[in-house]
Length: 258
Length: 285
Image (cartoon, rainbow over all chains, first blue to last red):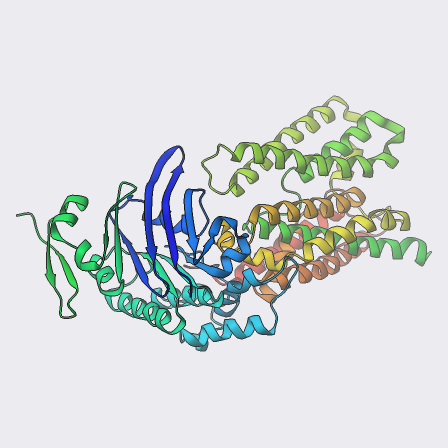
């Protein structure tokens, strides 16, 4: 189990500042969701945590500064799932999930019995072993997300970075995927850092939220502290009503202007 | 007679076919693009210019120099394209540099071909010799040719074959490959260098034989699926077999006259390619 803590992070892309002075942390085994309007810098924060964009500031994985780790050592600790993963259409599910073992292979190494066992376990865990030989082009949206999560899980990460894991899914599949991530977090002690557009879902599944706006942290804390009508209306320029759901968590509903 | 004339020719055609197909498969993996082949990135154009320079400007010394000139020209063409692409992609908006590199290859090829055409146009008496080289031939095969390219062929083939797994990882894109701990730029440079060496070795002894480098990897993919751990070795084997077959046809169809091997590979390869494409399952998302 490993926590992830971002301190005073700044990212500049194409000479434009995208993130400034951002600090946030997910406790070991916790779930931190990043929310905020389009262009707030949520995906960039995830990519910086994955080591995919240059940044100033520090990203701590447990007690280790991520910048001191080799690319492979970092990849063993942190699995990254982008918003739109590239799924080579002719590759089979089994071949794709086995790519998750890449961080464990030396430059000239090939996957061994242990790697295949881990990939098989990931297939079983996500209940997709029965279509292991299917081509990626033949998967539905919900199946694709499971397959991508299986690849991430095959890396045996301590931290799971998810960029909009539910953006392409209907409400039923959204729930399934988020429940699945929650199960993985509870069984495997994974720490989850994700971005989510759906504010109510973010409040239901994450134990802490960070609201980003124009590259800065506007609010952070437990869902009930961040999902308030006044904060959301000022940051999103939207009109919403926030009520309390049956689980005691906030429910954010849009309200028409007139 | 058999040992000195037939056998070196069979061995050389197998070697050349294997190298062209393997280089084509390697490039297709590196560029994630099924349309590229072993002559891309200025390799064919550079070899063509090198051979033309040797034939036009060195006259009698030509025959001995042409292979070396083609070999050097081919490698120089790829190096020029690679450096141009690397410089251009620093300020390019085309993403991870793959498209920039391909475009740089097209620019360098056009430039080299223009120079070659100009040279040729000024010395019309050499057109026949240059064209027969451009169309490719294995009719002058000797053991000496086989042994001269063998070291380059062996080194480049081994390097390419060792990167099948890396090319599979690159298939998910540079960003996800990096997130998996791979360094795409390093893999790309090594594989491009090895493919350039393989193609240059083949071109030096056989001229410009088209179609092998683009068609054979697709046949291999059709037989073995998309994983480069099988596509690469299978391309090597099919490429060798295909060129031996094509050269046998080139030798016998109009016997005692010979068809240029490049003509045969295209005449056989084009319909075969259509057949392969027809059989390829549509790639949907």
